[in-house]
Image (tube, rainbow, N blue to C red):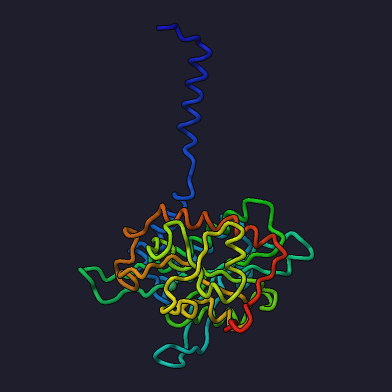
Length: 321
Ligand SMILES: [Zn+2]
């Protein structure tokens, strides 16, 4: 056995010391950390308009602060308080209180910063309900903690580099599950003129893979309605048409109200019609973190491209809702 030279021994020691101190935090750790809070039993299913929804909003706001995204809600904060009379699916009009969380990354290009890319997800779920196998907490891990975390990770990626040319708004809507009251209020009280919003991508249910498409693919609702999906796909997004057209998913998330205002707005998803939809089984234990990590990662470069591009998506003739 050769005699080890003292300086080599010291170098090796230093290397090991540094290596052990620098266990790097991976994207998957960040994703899992946020998921284990938002979809925990402690959050009691983040019911629309509830105190638990406010806790989710507060968490998302604090994450945006930590990431370095500016607040764009009420009074210099991230939260936009929502209060008023709203339409509900079953009960019709009634008084409702909820909130949205709004963060803003100002574009760096003088000519393009008035063009806004809107990235959204909904933070509420359906709360506590009828027990199934002794579990009455409807955690909403896939629906839609997964989408909120996608928006957070996109915010993190965009904030860590030179600001994009366009402005990017990150919005978490409240009360989507009860009919989109947060979204409705946002449209009535937008932080930027609605005409300045070039595109909206809503992220919904990306926590599990959909066996109807390839394992690394995501689908975009209303894919053939505009040229946004095809153009994102050209720039690396693993985006394909929604394989479940009978489900009318284009109409079933917050993107739809925006689309009806003329904004090119679609939802990104990989919901494979699993039986835990709106059940207590939509929990952290059923999240496929490898898929979710890959899904979010696959959208980073295409979204960065969109935020820096002069491309303005348009509705296909006759396909505008
Ligand atoms: Zn949802």
